Image (cartoon, rainbow, N blue to C red; front, top):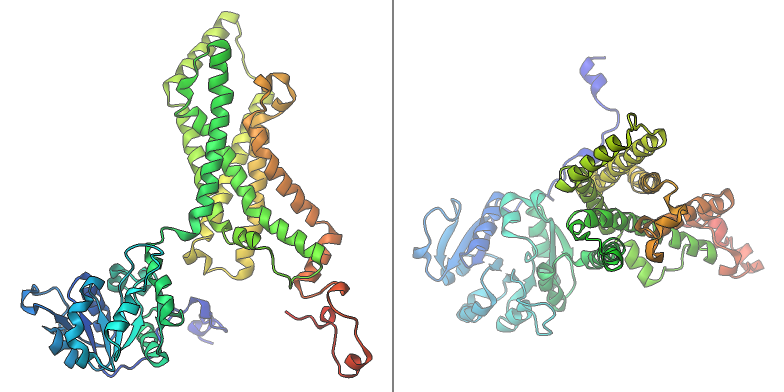
Length: 492
């Protein structure tokens, strides 16, 4: 067998094949664009690259500078352009100028009119721009689409930007036409329903990180709590009781004590909903009952929480490396050396402290490294290259490894500090002790679910088995008809 044949895999890996657009064979149809702005130019570039002929209608085509549009694009007046358009017309102009198109009703009748505009404010409660356009042109078939795709994504290609195109219309045929057009342009068309849904579609580009609101709020509240607690514990109370001025610690030391506590608690919040979901399935004895809405929402925000935990952990690492560069650390080192010389100590080596320091740093570095791997695999471009089993192993198995290493990092740092009375000045526990409560509960809960009796029952439930209390007893008639109970049928 030739060497080239030996290198050829027996089974082709379809996951590595680039995604190809659907064969469209447009036959060089002419697509019209009303408007000559930046978005119109980006649309023209993408349509010409996909084999369409493009005609642009402008109020003053002679005022458009040469070279703004690609070669082959015709620049005509609005009426001339619409007369030469066969089926699809993009309305690429601001909604406040829609009324200037009323004189084109006759040439736009029967054509698919695609509205690409966005709303000016969220949840206005008023009809959408597409609905207003449909009222102005009752004889045209208005479709809402392409408003969530930026001009940059149109010019650079679908693989470098957002690939989803949200489409809504009351005309099924017009919707199919625009969906096919979007697929030929290498975009992923998503049918959003009737034209009434265009109100939501127009609000989508105005929403700033809609899935990040809750995680960001939780992170902000945790930072506020731990920073305030550290300020009260290490700065304000010493100043009020002994007149000790520690306010210089606020920009660096207090922040560096806050960040690891926040990162540890948020990482525990990533894996706590999974434990609660497993506990609910064990108690209910079935996987077919829906989780509470708050738990579903929480589980859907685990990726955002994990990335915020990684951010806080990374900042903590940077802050820790910068601690030795500040003047306060230099002064403290000189003071310690002076006291050692004054006390006549020639050899200050302490074996327990050396072990504590090395174990503390090693577990912290390993924990940050594993957390970095979790953050990288959460990116769509990396996660899509993994199988479901690989992704689960990284996000779940290595995730608990990161949580364990982070807990060890904190415990090695504190050692047996929590067992001494001087660790509780003003009857306030140290910050790290508060930060360890939830992560330790999560880790203990995970170990508890790993017990063979619970793990076996949970695995059966997730494979379709149900507790007998969730289905009626089988009758003789069911047995005669060959009906199996649900726990024996193995339904997925």
